[in-house]
Length: 319
Image (tube, rainbow, N blue to C red; front, side, top):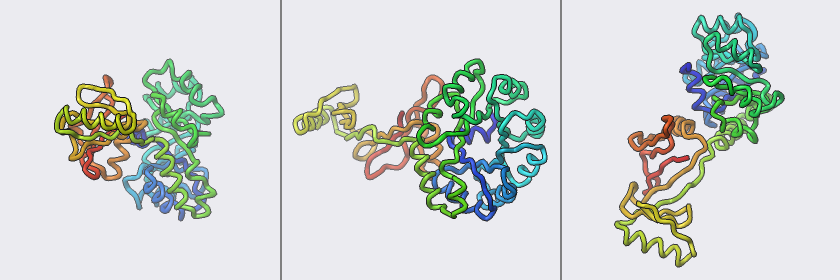
């Protein structure tokens, strides 16, 4: 898979942006980055698109900015010259796709049918757009359509929002989702970038779903651990579940049989999507201990510790 598309996969959401005025490009990009989505598809539906892409690229060189609703080869050239790192088309235009492939420009064409998907495969693509997603049957349609095409992933756009995005991302056929609910042009034109940042944060939080799994307390040995576990049972009538290394008093409290990781113990935080969560934390400047990482049989991360303690507690991510 193309490196740019791999990065988009780890972000998870691609804000689809319609800019009427190029002056709004930089404050919008700033709001998206602060909100946790350093990515945007700027649609070529307005005359401001080219200048907007150039402005964002100059202000934020590391941001993944692409051009959407690209309908001609000329628009491809203008978008790339302005700094676009990827191209998105609403349908499958063979001329545009071939042009981008020949020039090694990442492109995700709209492929709402099996014929379109096969045409994309023929030209060497392994990621396609599915648009308009909801009107065409949503995730159920994508699953049915994707079944014969084992190596193909989809970027659905159209009708995706905070309420249904995880339904899409839960499917392993989905690379990422495009959406505009956090970047509505009415908010952009009104200069409500604080609101856009808040909606972006909300979208990221909803996608990643960070939540407490359990808190673990370190003990010096098994006898002390049993005493602490019995105290939880006596005081709160919590049941106990013993495993080789600890006692669980409900699923939320773990009492370790030894002086484990962390000065006082550890905190386990669940997430919906490990790779996206890891990428998000690293973008926030949070260091991870890759020596602690655990992987499933397919090589996907399922567990990892953060390097820094939080108030004396080590912290790890898990599914």
